[in-house]
Amino acid sequence: MRPSPKGPSEATEPASRPPVAGLLLAAGGGRRLGGRPKALLDLGGRPLVEHAARALLDGGCTPVHVVLGAAADAVRDRAHLPGCLLVPNPGWEEGMGASLRAGLASLSGTGSRAVVVTLVDQPGIGADAVARVRAAYASPSSLSSAAYRGHRGHPVLLGADHWPGVADAARGDRGARAYLRRHEAEIEVVDCSDIAAPDDIDTPEDLRLLG
Image 1 (cartoon, rainbow, N blue to C red):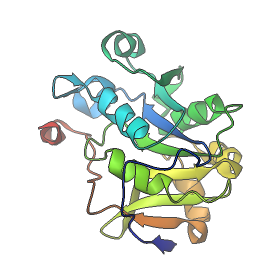
Image 2: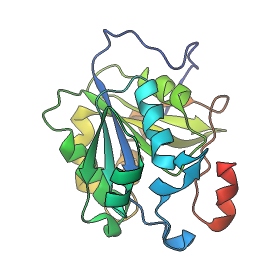
Image 3: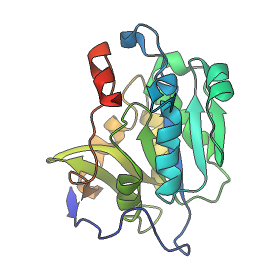
Image 4: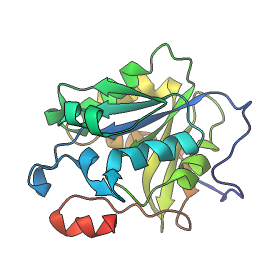
């Protein structure tokens, strides 16, 4: 893994940069939360999915695709997601891999040369971390990942050259993990410890992260 220096500016990038899309995986049913879909958890009076989508938009990603699964109709009804394309994933119960495959497939033909992938259940990750990882884009063969105290996490940037391999390897709840492990030497690590927190919401005890 190749470390990357921290960037001086987080949420703004030159408009001339090649298109880097955003992909939000928001299909989970919250099984360990008693069946409460994570996209609809309350953060400041609004669905959590809005916060996560706004982080991608404000971090400079375009287009932004949001993969929905559990309670998709309720998310469409309750969440205000301007500027986002909502991608249905009828196979969401298979795990994160199915959502990643659906999201990457939806980006085909958009002209995007890379995508920044985030998860809906990490409220501590905002636009600054997205922008910092996005700034690591160099070419369609780019691979980069945020890191927190030496451990890789989200956001993750996947250059378009990697999308077929990532989709092929995305199974169960592994997402891109298996593919990234095989290509670890190519990953540019972007330290985001000072601007974000990677804690995710999996259990009722984790709901404290929503304030």
